Length: 82
Image (cartoon, rainbow, N blue to C red):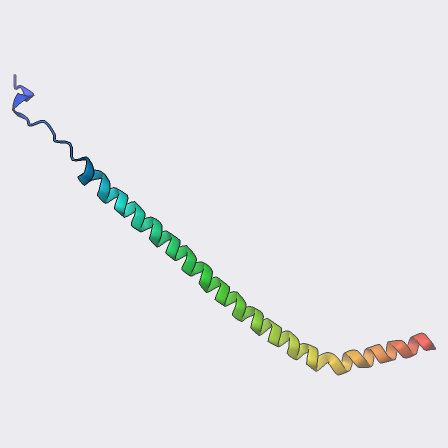
């Protein structure tokens, strides 16, 4: 009954439909890379700090136990000579 001839044919809007989507993808891709880099950098700083703390704690424990370790080594050496 009604014909579609009065409806305008769609005009090709290729650059206006694809470029915004493409630019959004590029921005999201860059943002994703930046987030990954930032998280990786934060984890590296955290691990470096953790290793320094662990290393410091390990050094403190080793220094605290050094006389005991030397005493044990000396006694074990004495036992071997007996």
